[in-house]
Figure (tube, helix red, strand yellow):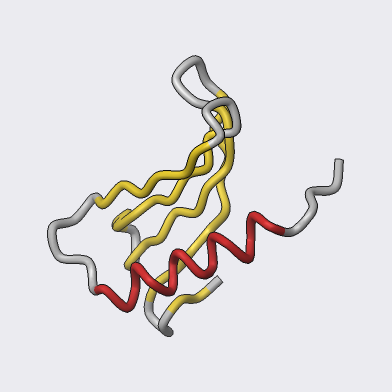
Length: 76
């Protein structure tokens, strides 16, 4: 999925001892810029920035994409 024409977003899951859930990762080329993760065991969502300078409009677009992507039912 493209965000703001130049950023790539993908949905990822993580089931480890540390966390259990799904999230969205946002990249510029091959560089991970941010992650928004919903931990179902803690029932909370959080964002991690991996770069000092992430445009606010990218953060806002990422949050909207996260809300839409993770609100859709998952087929098993």
